[in-house]
Image (tube, rainbow, N blue to C red; front, side, top):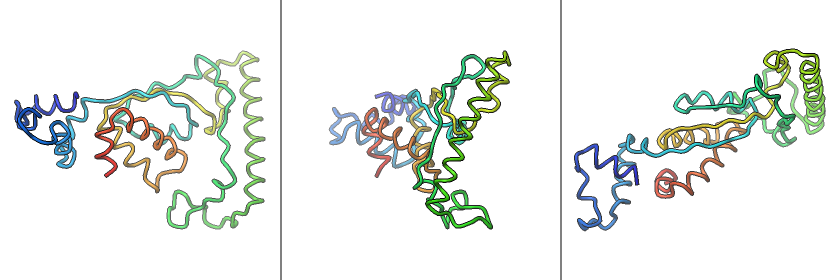
Length: 209
């Protein structure tokens, strides 16, 4: 495991007593637990992964705040964006928080109802259709692709690859799996957690303790 090898190398075999052949009952797992619980974090930078994700642009705007990751996003300058938009459910529209300001309604707004949420979703669907018509009209008229994309809303799905090391993936999940994180990005964080649990099960077990 690159994490274990990096820890031993960085201390000039200072962790050699953790080797299984020295009789430690947990072997590498014991060293991994020691590193994680005592916040020796740099060895976890020796492992990492690249994922490809499709998400609404509004989610990517939050995601890109994590400057410890490298991103390569689909560019509408080179190819037209596919027509795929995020439509929240009625339940999502009704999930106004009284404690989380970011998830709360603006001051002075009406009390949201099921009927009001349905009406707004219809308006949103109409807006998506209109924005797509303007976008495609610009492309047909010969407007440069980089300009024609101006009407594309933040609810449009884009696609990107994101890359970082294991230490920073866990930092990302600490923030984005939290119940106070926006619901939409939390769904993607949960899926990344599943991937990490499969690829790095021993570290994931320590992270989830």
